[in-house]
Image: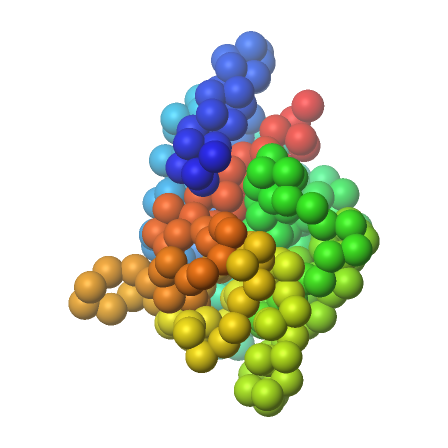
Length: 261
Ligand code: GUN
């Protein structure tokens, strides 16, 4: 099933669940940056929430907000009984330590799954795994290559694939082209999250049965583009736009409902 249809179907199921709840779940989003990708994500998250009957509130703070001020907002949200879950949109402005912020959010309200004690997983990797399962993509004993080692995507993605008994290799900006070529040639699943437009292209050779999951979003005068050129000769490739971004947003709504169940 293409991602758009899959997400539409899943949202109907969640909407039905929310309609039966006496107290509607409440999601708060804290945003400090003015990054175009973040604005698009936040707008999408609020739209999804309202479609599902979830209360969503955006707390927009100035980009000059200090770490101490942000920690005070987090402390207030941790204690607010009306707030079921909240997220602080990444990336954070310079001068604010990402790890300190992630650890300050109560694991009971951390719908991003960033806290080490959170029972939830980060939304992008979780959303991707849910979709791979739905599409019955074989994982056990398969060669999975993760391109990129970010804390939000690459590292947790590798962990989830490993949990499904994939042979996981994480490649990154210091990997040589020759090594990358060798790993990609043998890969059954490729998750690309390096933020370089159309990095995966016909310079590489792919297994015809391979699955490419494209996490990249780059914008130019022609619109949004992924980290892979469209229509590579593989069995399944997720599109950009209309791909992983939708899966991430869906996973956030699912994480929120998991917390409120
Ligand atoms: N920025 C990009 N992706 C995410 C995400 O999943 N959560 C948060 N908080 N920020 C992000």
